[in-house]
Image 1 (tube, rainbow, N blue to C red):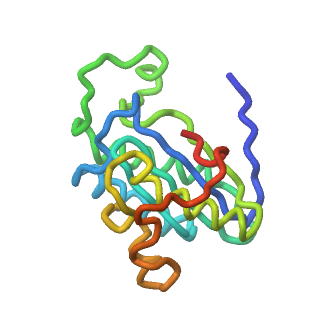
Image 2 (image 1 turned 60 degrees about the horizontal axis):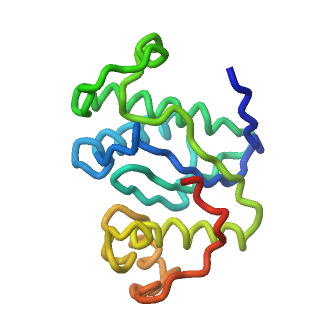
Length: 183
């Protein structure tokens, strides 16, 4: 089994990319959104973390979490969230294709890719770049023409808080490094 190197810094802020199995476009469906919302609430009640930013797209999501001091277990939180969503989603996903032997052995549903991409936020500039990346992502994927048009994003909270103007990135893409995203 591969040994994935994860940066585990207690209390740090992390950017994540989590992808649907075979990039199937069901993450924005109402049942999946509800299952995800409930799973996150359940996990946060037992293992707190702050959601700094979030965007949900049909086949993947990006988010930034801040973990509590002394805690670096984001992998466990993702495992619990994915498991809870899988249990709740049940047969709601398209599981018409047979699971690979390794997935069948572990009784995994065909909802999520096994892994996720993680990046430790280094400083305020890095955080700002990742926030811009998250909030511009629906436009990048041609799901809308401005971030304000995409309903499944923390962009709207950032506008209410005065951190972005409503017309942010309307017609002009933000300058975001190519290395961001893990897509």
